[in-house]
Image (cartoon, rainbow, N blue to C red; front, top):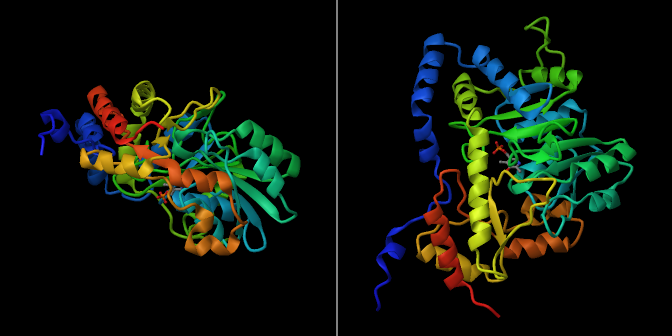
Length: 378
Ligand SMILES: *Cc1c(COP(=O)(O)O)cnc(C)c1O
């Protein structure tokens, strides 16, 4: 056996590195947590309300209603809009399972549509073709960090009189033209799961909206359907889906760093673009009007198995988002519209490379060099 060069055997590249992010803001975190602990106010209160205002301002929406996670935020939006049994909600087949899950959990029917072959995002033409008299809403997913073409989607949904909802769990701070994720549709849904671009130290989520009545309904539903004026009156069927003050404190600190971390992610993506093996492995396309916040660095290759095993042997962690499209997952097969060729082909070719704000040029080069030797031309 010939010995590999030392650098190749010792450098390990994690898929993500939350510890580096935490270290950067450690002293701010310690102070904020102490304040919450001393206040004795752990659910709701000024720290949560403060973050809600910051997040609304950041997204360019009028209100933020924080909730327990990014699946609840989707479900609560649907419930607050009165969507349920008998309604159809159009969702992209290429997404995290939670998008369709939320639709089914409120009793509505997910209608899966195929995605744009370049961006792998929901395609307005496919949406238009899937409309039926029962369609009540469309959920656009800003997958991998890139906003869907909201201009085209808005044209379709406005013409049909439908609610346009944004699943922005992977799109914190992303733009479509001048508009930020969470400010275009009737409501935007965010997750603050630790690995998201803005992540808490546990679960968290939020809805952004500029619709006053919708915001009020969401505030009530997340808190047992409580009436605004009388805490012992419950006007609607609600649930318990609230954000903890400790999580809000973390998010308030992190949101101040989010733009810098996004810039760092974009620089990593550019570095990948310059070093990936030409023609064999390419990043999923980014359109000029929808610059990505690179939640994930997703590439396409026809040699994915070789790429994954080569990278794994060299200590590089990878993922696949997602290997089984939603319409082919167990609970959703009964809603399957038949083959969705763009999504199904992509599911066999996509590969998520390491991506995090503190990733170094050396790490990117190592991933690209390893990839270049794992895949072969022709
Ligand atoms: C993470 C994610 C969700 C769900 O968020 P949770 O906070 O984990 O419930 C929903 N949609 C997409 C696209 C996601 O990536």
